[in-house]
Length: 212
Image 1 (cartoon, rainbow, N blue to C red):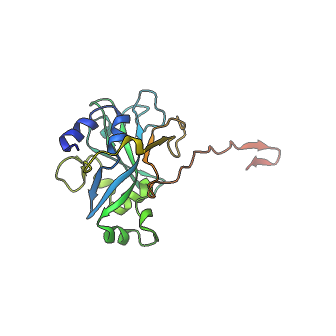
Image 2 (tube, one colour):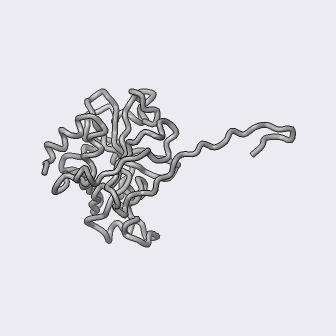
Image 3 (tube, one colour):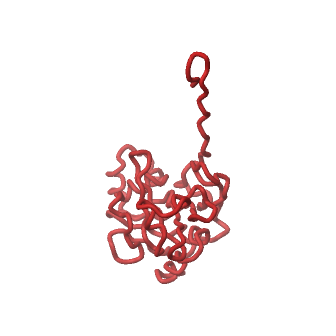
């Protein structure tokens, strides 16, 4: 068993061990608590083209450069929020995307936020669904997660047994898509479905115009 101090130490280290350690952790916000069941690790500028920090610091990704233990929240596809936990030494950008979880408290609140979902295991199954169930949006950007604030990350009652953790390629990324930096609790029904990114074919101009 490890406490918040140990969790802080874990997050300050390399991103892959931090991702492993986040499995089983509890994330609480908006009257709901989620047990994290699936994550993805993203390094910074050092050879990870799938990372938001790959090309350097920007206003959007600045929190990724540390210190660790803070929330990196971003908006995607013009409709969804996704949340990452910042890891690593300060100045070296890296973060772990929280991909899925099980609602362990506040189930009725989570259902009220996602009334179209039929099964409870689908309430936080996927990074955007997880944020929706917790009521998280851009206001959580840069929030410290290890304190007593409105968004709190806490250690599980006991670390997840490494023998129950699976690894595989990350979902929907264009760069380094085969890197096995997605980790999940094997057999957990809340884990999201794997979808490999398939680039759209380039359109070619033909005699009668652009070919679809």
